[in-house]
Length: 546
Image 1 (cartoon, rainbow, N blue to C red):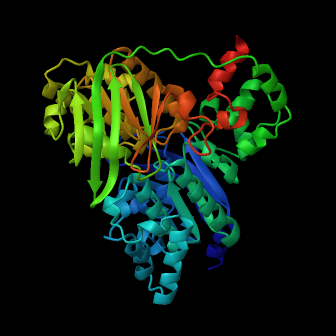
Image 2: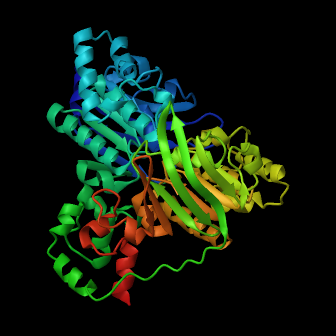
């Protein structure tokens, strides 16, 4: 008993020389990793996709190795309990877990029943159960979803329900894998505010993996960086801001690094209060961002008067949209605003109530999706739904054969940083890797319109930068790109047009410099600090260098 107490005192979770290798793989994803998580701390895990972040998180509730199989070495103790002897069920009262794909953990037909499910399994009294359900409905801003089916919610709404369900059990340790990856800016702030409140007011220990550091870096106590072949690096957020590649930093922090500021801001507030900001604004007063030059071709997708209902309620009303060859159009809006519904309507997956959809000048309203497959390539929010082959390379080859085209599939995988995964099963890849694998599979068909639904979900900043370069190259070949996303920073860097959906229709349509400016929500960090038409760090750096 004394040994257990000493472990708990050292940290609520202790990993000691952990080694783990997944089945059917030749190398360990974790190789001698140790980590002590202090009780009551707020810890952030970062790193490239595939460096073992999700695996390390799954060690904390016994999913590794009890569910995953493979070869496991070392020891993990959570609240003094050895995970070798205590699996996920045994630890469920202590560890709350939110997966990268929240749809995989939602089991019931109503949101309020989903929140109560875990409480029922632990024998919580009905009065206490009702109180906790009401609390988390309010905290996560999902009261209006109470009687909805999780299966009919948007990806971001499901993500908030999964987080609420985990919080309802009031665990001592809450583990979250990319908890804001599908959330609109409002939802992300609400979730982080709830996590911070539970951490500070109730002493809940929070561990999360996250790629979008602009959302979380200022909230956490400690950051652990995973790099392949190197020992993990542990540091405070302030120290990590000086060590990390600027591409992964919050834009306001990267701006400070680029300008050589001594005191690096981690938040918009601290950037606005920085003593060097006045001088920067003075230097930018008489210059403007370089104009974005685009020359789109003829219309390839034309939508007019589109109306769509879901569950007998209108989701889209009188939507008009024209997308031209070589144009990059970003669809934005809060969770549930109809972004995915609009994309599915273009593809023939969603029945429309009214309106017309033309592709390549031909009316395709209500067309069989198979008729559009040769023209429009679609990467959905759940990329795993595209995979059915045993090897990734065979997924690409199958697509090429179906389209009767000759494609260098090995070169395409290399272009997306996945050459090493050619022989791997697609479902064995990490979330970000699966996203890129799905994109490679679709690009093997050489579509003329590429439709992407949350393509940066689970994607690390380095591969997001490569994705932007790839999409720009695709545009140069005349391919139109339509992307639904909450990634404001990517849209500012890459999109030609932004269509903002809200109130069942398009409320704004224009270049990023008009749609993503002067907004409380859909605006970049740089714009919130500098105003005018400044959107990105690169724009500011280029203007100062000219």
